[in-house]
Image (tube, rainbow, N blue to C red; front, side, top):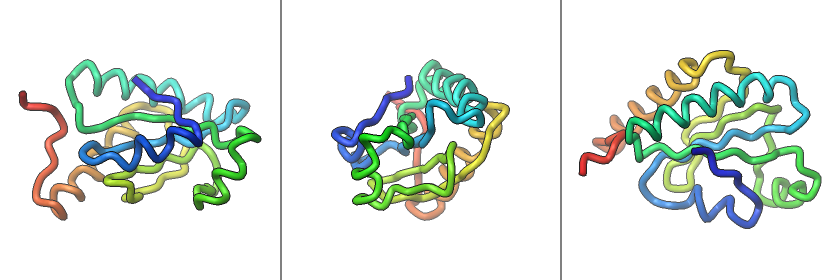
Length: 130
């Protein structure tokens, strides 16, 4: 499941402890975003169906005019869309501005980010073992 973020909910979600939070910054009329979004949705569904509970998926409408002040005041500007930001404990670990034509491309980046967390923090289970 992909959660839609708003200025009111953005930091409530990404500042939470525990999971890796992946935010896709997108624009509704952005053609590269329209290509990437279905692959992002496939990946989010895959993670949910396989009980990978330590990775959460979000999207944030970066071009929404009413969000402009929030974006500027919180230093959330991107080089373009779609941009994926990987947050852990509220900190950006990785950022990728790219069109993904296959869900596997996004998954490979997630695996690399998780490996970095494992090496730095000494462990990061992708799924809930309970």
